[in-house]
Amino acid sequence: MSHAVVVGAGPAGAVAAAVLARGGMPVVLAGRDDDEPRYDVLLSGPAREILRSIGVAVDGWPVHPVTIAFDATVSHAVPEAGYAVVDSSVLRDTLRDHAVRCGTDYRTTVPDAPHVVLAGGAGHLGEPPAESTGVSCARRFTGPLAGDGVVLRLLAPPADDPRGRPRCAWLAPVPGGCTIGASALGAVSADALMDEAVAALAELDPRVRDCVPAGPPVSGPLSCGFGPGSAAGPGGLRVGDAAGLVNPFTGEGLSGAVQSGRLAARAVLAARDDPAAARREYRQLLESSFVGYFETARHAARRYHLAWRVLAAGAGSEHPFHAKGRRAVVLPEGVSALAGTEPLDLPPATRVRLLPFLAACDEVCLSLVRGDWPFLARMFTADREDKLLLRPAIGFFAALVAGGDVPARGAATVAAAIELATLGALAFLGPAVTPREVRGVDWDSATTVLAGDYLLGQASRLIAEAAPGLSWSFSDWLGELTSLRAAVVTTGAGAEAVFASLFEFPLRIGAALGGADAEAFRACGATLGRLFLRLEDVLALRGDRTRLDATLPDLLDGRISALPELLAVPGLTAGALPPHARPAAVAAARDASAEFERECDRLPDPFARSLLSAVGAWVAAPAKCP
Image (cartoon, rainbow, N blue to C red; front, top):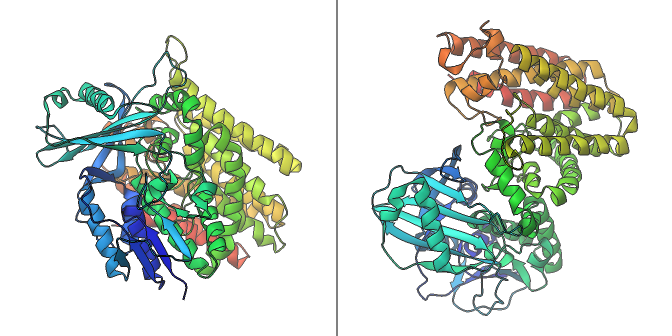
C-alpha cells in the first residue's frame, strides 16, 4: 500500500498528516522533540474553519474582533472577522496530538516514502531552508490596555523610497497584558522592527509605551516567495512557510499553512499510487486557491505604495467595495462581489454541472487582474469545493443551459465580463466621494475611479473580443445602471431598480446566448435583485453582517436601501427610523420572496428552475428567521 511522510510537525504538517490519516493512508509525521520557542500566534476565522472541518476542537479559544489601522486617525473595525490568540506550543501540541489520534505515526526520523510533504519552514530535519524575504518577531508585554481586540497596523511606506516594502505591526490581548508582533519584507533587524512596532501602536494607544516586556523576543525569517511550481516540485509538496505562503501585507501565515496542508493531503489522496500526478494536482489546487497572493508578493516592492494608499483611502469607509477589498487583501478571506459568509446549498449533481463553468469564469477574470491589480485577484477566489458563494455567473449559467443547446464557446468569457462589470459597478454604488484639496493625489476619490474604471474597461474589452454582437446590449446595460444610479443619488429613490438591473442582466444575456426565453429570465432576475436589496435592509436592521458588508447607516447614507421608498420617508436616516421599520422590511422581503418564487415557477427548464430556486431560498433565508 502506498504511504506518505510529512517532514515537519508544525501546523501545516500536522494538518496534512491528519487529513492523510483520516483518508486511510499510512503516514509518518516526522518532527523533533527539542523545545521550540513559545510565542502567541493569530488564528484567523478561515484557519479555524479548516481545523474544525478535520475534527480539531477550536471553540475553546476566545475570538477577538479586528481593527485595521493606518495611522492614529485612520482605522476601521472589520465586523465578523476575528482572530483567536493562541500560544504557539499549545497550537502545535493540539494539532500534533490530533494527527496521532487520527492514526498518524509520529517519529523524530524521516523514513523513505513515495509521497513526501515538506512542512519544515525555514529549515527542518535536513530540509533545505525556505528563501527568506523578510523577518517577523513577537514579544509578550505586561500592562493594562483598553479593549480586547486585535489591531493590525499597516505601516506607511517611506515617502522618499518608491520601493518601500510592506511592514505591519500587530497587537493582541493576552491575560495580564498583550503580545506585540511585527513583520517586514526586506532587510531589517528584529530589534529595530519591534521598536518600530511599539512606536506605531503607541500612536493608537499611548499606554503601549508603558508596557513592560514579559519574556524574551522571538523572531524568525519570513518567506513570501510562493509560487505553485516551486511548491509542487519533485522533492516533495511544500506547504505553509516552506512554500512561502505568507501574506506580504500582514505577515500572517497560519491560514496559508493549514489550508495548504489540507490541499497537499487531498492531492496525495487523489493520486495515491502516482506521486507525479499528486504534484500536478497539488499545483492546480494551489493555483486556484492562492491566486493573487504570489502575484501580490512578487509586485509588493514596486506596488506597495499603491496598495497601501488604496487600502488607506478606504479604511474609514463602509462602502461595499472598500469593505470587501479590506477582507480580500488584509484578511485571509476570498470574496466575490455579492456574497455573504454562508455558502449556497446546492444538490451534488447541480454542483458538478456548475463548478467547471465557474472555474472557467475565474480563470478569465484572474488572467486579467492578477498582473495589474493583484490585490483585486483575491476578490474572485474562494475554496470552490467547500464554499460556493452567490455570484452573477450562477444566474447566467442557469439561463444559458435552459435553451437545451451545448453552451457556446466563449460563454464563460461573457460571464466573466459581467462579473468584472458587476464588481466595477459595486465600486460606484453610493454618492461620489467629496473631493479633498490635498497636496498630490486625492486617494479617497482616485481609488474608486482607478478600480471601478479599470474593471469596467476590462469587462467591455472582453465582451468586444468574445461576443461582439452583445456589445450594444452590454453598453446599454452599463448606461442604464449609470442613469438609474444617478437618479437614486439625486432623488434618494430607486435603489431597487439598480439592483433589479444588476441581477437581471446576467440572466437575460445567458438566456439570449443559450436560446431560452430572455424575457422570462429577465423578469426572474429583476425580482431576485429586488429581493436581494430588501434582505440587505432586514439584515442591517437586525445589526447582522449584510452580503455587501455594509451597516444600516451606510446603506441609507449611500442610497443603497429600499427603506426610504418602502416607508415613504425621503432622506431617511438610521437615527430617525419609525418603530415599524423592521416589521415592514421583513414583510416586504417576504412579499419579494413570494414574487420571485412565482417568476421562477414560470421557467420551463427544470435545471434552471431548481438552481435559481436554491439561489432565491438562500437570499431570502434571513426573512424567514424569527
